[in-house]
Length: 607
Image: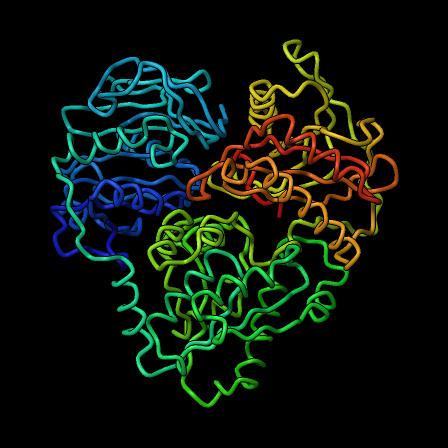
């Protein structure tokens, strides 16, 4: 259980202080403690030892900085607080430096690594000698002083965990808070229960009831104008507001941007109709306006910012159209916490990964003015699904694959008029001689070491061996700083060295319609195979990669719990190839690829 508002909790001796050093996963630590029944407060790095000493324990989060840089954080009196401390990633490096160790650049690790225990210390009680952990770092701790013990190592990181058991100071280079760390839950349990001496609390409050009461208190006599995208988050948030508010206090608008999936609008109306919410929802077709606004736009960040601004423009017009203008009103959004994190808007100094449309400049201004209500902005995707189920929403909605607010616009990569260089052949190690690899002059968004990257993509051709592909992707993205994403050829034209990135490809109705059909084929293929629940999300991406005059499709099935980290999903070969081959038959599609990158180093979406 995290405190609903970041700041000191009432009974800090029964809580953990989480110092937010700007990491992408900081709030996720609080979420994991909430799962364990432990209260926590997220505090800024300026918090002094006098405040931290009042807590049962302190966790230092990860962050995008290097501890040896001039602007690195320096927590006053960190070693004198008298409470147990656990440093994670950047926090591990910060604590080690304070204790006299050296932190050096190099030895990048992104994604899963195998951790080998050297000492079975308190943190690792109940875990295995060798275990999988999740890494995202480019600096490493070296030269520990005599009072510290190296507890665990990986192949690329000698000091992957250290301890000073006497003073109850611990550091781990990996992220125990992400679900891909095999024993992350046990490590956090050991810290809060064994080291800090806390016991789990029971939260008797009904979550839905509490949220409904919070909405009523926040809104008061005012009205809420809600932007509904049709996805899980906005629909659940809209349903919460509908339960909390009188009919005349709530107006919802669904904006058809022209970037929705096939059948999206009809599906939303059906889902809301069952719960008598459809009468509170207005539908506006603004596709022409969105295509005009994005004409000639290539940069992913500009796309997202323009889409966010257009949403606000439509909202302002709709307020007047539906008679909300004369009342005091709030803008309602289905923002969840990962949106805020990736947009660089969490507490501390989190890096900007990508600006979500619900965090564009105009929305930030409304937030600053106190004119936005976001009932779910402290929650993660899996928690939102649980809230939706508690509300009684259909499982078809609550369990559906996440779909970004900007829709297919950010799954349709664009290029300007300049000619791109050709693909370059890459030499792989002798262990992977059965694969052919090329570097594509095509960039996608990634997240490496808690910071945003915008790097090239590697394309592979060879046998569909998921273990080999996962290892290759990790190797290519961890050596040097050239790549953050790897794709594997599935169907269609396959002469990779001849691949070219086509110039002058923009967001047009024709390209978006082509992507919409490919997305439809993928969804129907998964439904036919009974495999919809086998993946957490399944983006389908159109990239301007030509092998025979057309473009290419990338399939991006992933598994995750909360969206903060993810593994690419290894689908059954029959289902995968059936989908790929059908998409390859679409006019204008040359090739179909599978994205075999984890998050990190890649983000789930390409833009």
